[in-house]
Every structure is written in structure tokens, then in C-alpha cells.
Length: 133
Image 1 (cartoon, one colour):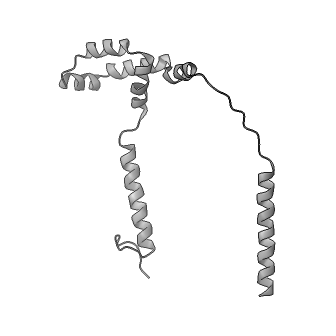
Image 2 (cartoon, rainbow, N blue to C red):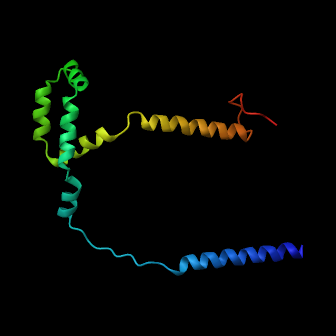
């Protein structure tokens, strides 16, 4: 019993020493105000390459076929994209970067892992390949 409390004391002393050393140096943070005009200009700024990417996307043959199938004139779509401001084009440019169905796949994997973990712990009986004790 005495040996156990001595070991716990040593470990707690080491842990306290490590935490103390980690918190000894705290760098100072420097903050400043940014004007709303500058913030809006930074937020709305779109690279010229993004406009070219959207134009290239609209020129793809499968996209043109889909636009025609939906009753949209491809030339009118090009004219409208050319007339968009940078602020209006920013969400459209980010939309092309998003993976299709990425969140759905992530949700399915998460649910599978949760069910597998609860099955391993013996809380559920969902999967037959999990060995029971």
C-alpha cells in the first residue's frame, strides 16, 4: 500500500511539473481592428482563375447538354456569368470545388463505426461477424 501511494505521488509530481512547464511560456496575442470596407473587399475578392474555371465548367459538353435538357440557353448562361460581380461569383466558384456526396459517405462511415463499436462492446447485436464472448 505504501509503495502504491509513493508511485502515485511521483507520477502526480511529474504530471504537475510537465503541465507547469507547458504553461510557463504563453506568447502574447496581437490584435487589431479591420475596417468593414477592407473586410468586405477581402471576402468578395475572386481570383481571375476562378472566373475562368466557371467558364470552363460551362463549356463542358455534358454541362451544355444538361442545360439544354433543362431549357437553359448555354450562350445566355455564359453572358450571365460574365455579368456576375466578384461577390456573386465567389459562392459559385466554391461550389465546383465541393465533392459530390462527400457528407453522405462520411455519415454512412460514421454510423457504421458507431454500430460496430457498440456491437464490440456488447451493447447491440447488429453484425454477425463480431465475435461474442
